[in-house]
Image 1 (spheres, one colour):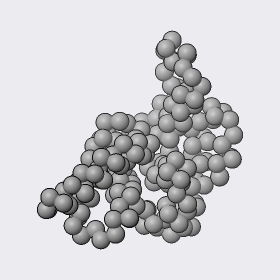
Image 2 (cartoon, rainbow, N blue to C red; image 1 turned 45 degrees about the vertical axis):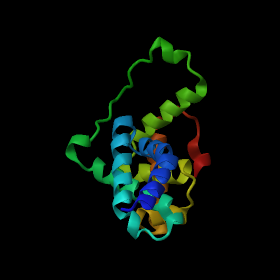
Image 3 (cartoon, rainbow, N blue to C red; image 1 turned 90 degrees about the horizontal axis):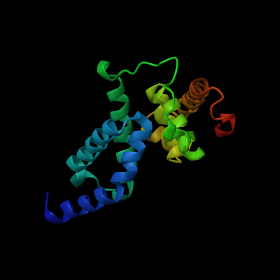
Length: 172
């Protein structure tokens, strides 16, 4: 890769790394895995940098690459998480936390209990702000599939959270 292209990639990476890392975390629920998945997504982009003609579509390409990586990673037997019946007691430090932080942790814990494809759809729809067509493009599936995965994902999230966050029906 020539120096100008390397510079373009470096600038894109610097500008988007944290946003992609946050999206990866929301999809997988683990910062270490999120770092690995983010790195893998950017490696894939770097390999194809010369072939990517539409630089405006880079975010969509990274999103798609990351989403596929998260779903593929979740299929590996050593990555399967086991749900527990009860959450551990909160420490004294967490009792003093701001409600928004507790809400965020509760939401993340609930998302971890949602199946990977449904979790990816929920993150792309409600946290990344994509519409149904945008999620369908990222996931390479039909809009109807996105809608059904969204409905199932919200139901799974509601079941995982119980009454923890109140009524999530306003999300759908």
